[in-house]
Amino acid sequence: MAACSRGLAWPPFDLTTARGPASWPRQRAVIRCCCAGADPLPRRRLSRAAAVAPERAEEWRIDGNKPSAAAPGRRRASLTAMPPLPFPAPRSRRQFKQQDFYPRCTPRGPAPQSRDTPPKRDTGIASEKEWGINLPDEAVKESGINEDGSTWYRESGEDVGENGYRCRWTRMGGQNHDGSTEWKETWWEKSDWTGYKELGAEKSGKNAEGDSWWEKWKEVLYQDEWSNLARIERSAEKQAKSGVENAGWYEKWWEKYDAKGWTEKGAHKYGRLNEQSWWERWGEHYDGRGFVLKWTDKWAETDLGTKWGDKWEEKFFAGIGSRQGETWHVSPGGERWSRTWGEEHFGNGKVHKYGKSTTGESWDLVVDEETYYEAEPHYGWADVVGDSTQLLSIQPVERPPGVFPAIDFSSAPPPKDAPPGMPPSSPLD
Image (cartoon, rainbow, N blue to C red; front, side, top):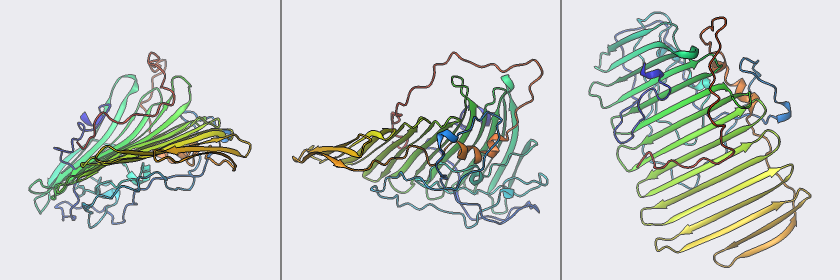
């Protein structure tokens, strides 16, 4: 089944041509069901929890116990200097409970209603509860026409393969009578005998104004072949494009954790509003033993040739480390201005600060100053395990006695701490 290929549920979404989920008022369907509800779904938020010290990290295995989640919070990274997109994010007049999407009583349930609206910028990676993935136990294939002429479909199934591979999936969608609004949504869970587990969702849509959007979310549990440690990875991709002006944006977020406290987080962002474009990248890396690396790079430009940006990086271990950065600007005529700065922290209350600019500024001094940095992630291994109960509960196909999973050790180990690069081209170009 296409929905369970080891990739996207549909071919990659092309914003310039694709058609996807729309938000329109709920229509009265011909079919009704007693299990539909009306409580609103929670809004998507980026969860963040209290710091988890590496020395308290437990030796988690693939089937280990799950600690409770810590209190949620919000990530700090954003590109506040860039203007927001003006085109509207249409919303449904009503949001629907999960039962409105898949009837738990009989296949005579109501037509699935689109709960999707264009994703919001700078909201990070949603939680399992916010996605509300609910896969049925039996295969379903049904479709229908509502009284207003809009159509819908819903189908689910299961695919199996070698090494105990199993993928359970559900996909649904619909459109209005003339096809000007359309939405699609796919859910899946995957597993095999190596302990690999994956939970994911993908949705896309468009509305009558020509706005289009796409979003994909995924979390994965697996055992690292080189360290033999359990790892959990979470990711989200989002993009939207205006149908009435030259405006759109794209974001990719990722988080990676292992049972020893190693953590990596980052994001790539791109946006355009008429004659102005902007980019942002940031990353965080914690090795679980006290070393931390953080960096941010953001820049913007106009069609007239004006460019500006700002970037910084910090590295610390055991109270000793450095910070450095640059702010710059280029005029349409090519004139460049920049200011660079740096700090060396010696771990003894002394900090060496230095910098210069293209206008002749300069400084170089040593000051008495305490060193502060975040040596541990606010949201770590114990937190992500506590928030991944649905992922951990995925049941693989039972392995027959005497049959062992095939593990490929021929691949090279992952690269060391290299910040990821930007895509070769913008998805909105």
